[in-house]
Amino acid sequence: MTSTSPWWHDAVVYEIYVRSFADASGDGVGDLAGIRARLDYLTGLGIDAIWLTPFYPSPMADGGYDVADHRDVDPLFGDLADFDALLAEAHARGLRLIIDIVPNHSSSAHPWFREAVAAAPGSTERDRYIFVTSGDEPPNNWQSTFGGPAWTRLPDGQWYLHLFAPEQPDFNWRRPEVPAEFLDVLRFWLDRGVDGFRIDVATGLFKEEGLPDAPPADQAFKAESPIWGRPEVHEVYREWRVLLDSYPGERMAVGEVWTDSVEDLARYLRPDELHQSFNFAWLEAPWSPASFRKVIDDTLGTVPAPTWVLSNHDVVRHRTRYAESQPGAGLARAKAAMLTTLALPGSAYLYQGDELGLPEVKDIPQELRQDPIFIRTKGELAGRDGCRVPLPWSGTAEPYGFAGEGVLPWLPQPAEWATLTVERQTGDPGSTLEFHRTALALRRRLRDSLPAGIDWLDSPDDVLTFARGSLICVLNCGTEPTPLPPHQNVLITSAPLTSALLPPDTAAWLTH
Ligand code: GLC
Image (cartoon, rainbow, N blue to C red; front, side, top):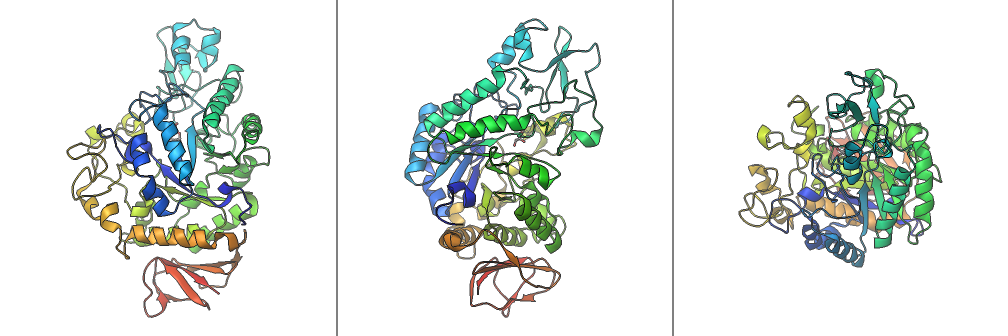
């Protein structure tokens, strides 16, 4: 990569789940002013860009992914002036800012859906969503991603489609006002100066004409099905690309593309479509050199602008995930995986709290859980609240500086987090936070000199070793310490070497 590549090519993007980052207003929910007050923390961490999850007016049936107005800020998070101030201050510090766009569905509180409900079956208003008359049974067998049928019936007998919660009706993208509205929404935020968009449920939008039944296997995210990955969706991204390219300053879009095929992932990244997609295969790979190597080879061989993701607000935090196959190894593996991630060509998407080594919180009391997945499956699935617990900043008790003294955060923070706060970890050279700061600073120092490809180096079966120009990255996934390959210097290790050997569940960066 060179310094003339577009910024997003090798950026480290930090995902802020706005409700859980920092609360300035004192209501126990994170907000834009809270983020603004913590920008120095983010520049000190060494990231290049921030991705903000939805902060738009919303009844919060799905944490803000149920958008009622795409051109404003929910009072819970501040107002447009707070947004403008945050953007200006981020830019002044050299940080880029991308925001979430949710085009597959709106909130049921969106004026269009309210108008649709008030209007008659067959009206233009209803046709902006997917309404069907089908008697007492839902129009087809589609299930909501959050559990239960994907259809809800209105008192007048019509059913409407919601691939997520009933409070998230799916738009009808075949109706011209819908694409026109979204182009206008993108313009609204581009004019304010955002650097790009994260596109929610990017494989959604269009459904197969006739809405046919689909076998359960086709209802999961996959390359193409009656529900996901319809060919028409690519035309939308071609239009969005033209719009993004018409603005100065390398504006970009990154798609949330859950798919079972890397070739399909690449289809969203043709030169006239999206700039990037999240590489979820990386976070899905089990802890083994073979599975990591396969994802790396598939990605680098197929995807024009690779990304690497270990965690986000929808999945179990990687520290906890990696401990599932080896209890006790979670933190070591999380640090080793992060060092490997940061050595790979492309950009890395970090999730808030990765840098603190936060685990998934598994013991949130039922009555406090808010994820519609938990609620709609009546607790059968735990849902995603456990990775969304507000960050611990300082102090020894809840709310750990996330909010003012005495304020209860919207989800409870565990007592053990007293040892994981930013304050506690800062300045401790052995801490997870200082490890991330050092790794990010090294990456920044090296990145202009590193090529866009890697070479695999011979290594024992349990070890993954690759060179990227002068950098060698070694990851020991085995159970025994392993010798380092020939090298000049050790730049960083995710755990101390033992007698010059790389311990299990540890990674190192070397120069040669
Ligand atoms: C995406 C979001 C997730 C949300 C869903 C519905 O997958 O990342 O949090 O629940 O879309 O909008």
